[in-house]
Length: 369
Image (cartoon, rainbow, N blue to C red; front, top):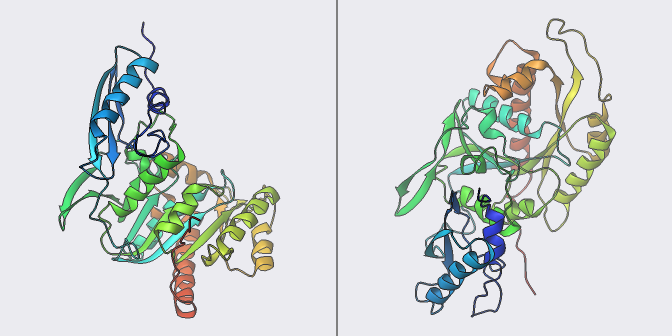
């Protein structure tokens, strides 16, 4: 039985191929498009060149094919397409001209329910009559397709003003895009940083988001290249930080807030959400059990002089709703749904206050010396 072929095997082989114009390998130079497809012993992908008249196209394609046969497996059937870097693109100063407010949902660490908050906030805002989009920017752990019950949906494109754009899915009144729509949901991603950030940028700039009142971005936990890509690509209206009352989570939340308020980033923090603030038995909604600590988020918000937008209780139906693709904010009869509706109102007010008091956020420009 032959060993299976993995994307990393192909990328490692391609890393031995150098582009004659610079001497750098084609993976390091981000010339390998993120459209690799593997079907048994058949591999296809694209190589990106700066211009269609590049004199090294044929030699690089041949070298890439040879490298795969030499370093991966000699019996692989290889199809290599060539592309040139897209010339027609949105204006860099505003890649989403139809979007009024861009809000990042961030957390200092994983496991605090950031994606649950982002998904339910999006649904709650849509229920209030606003046009809402949600981008799952957690490249290596996408969960939005699962939470909205659209894991098996396919993406399609259509032409807008001469450009082929991705059509976001729409569910519960929310436009959705996630890297999870483009990869096998049971496979782990082994993309290098450049491939991941390019994929994310495409989901932003090569999608037909249309007119939106609120564009929410479910960011990866922690701080990473993905965060830098987002603030370089988009002028964020502000960010919402999600944490639990647990002290270790609050310490990480503090570091996340510091990143956004740094002079080089300078993105306003709209407020803090204390998720899993207390446990409420569904049959006894008047009882509260502070299993992760008490009032930690409130104390951090007071310390950093930022609003505490909401305390979201922990109930079993939140997990069940996420697992079955029906966010809890759809259900009026639960205390948690009411908490998310309250959060939506607080976010609307926080955005209005921010827009009245502060000028538009500028994109972060990185200067290479």
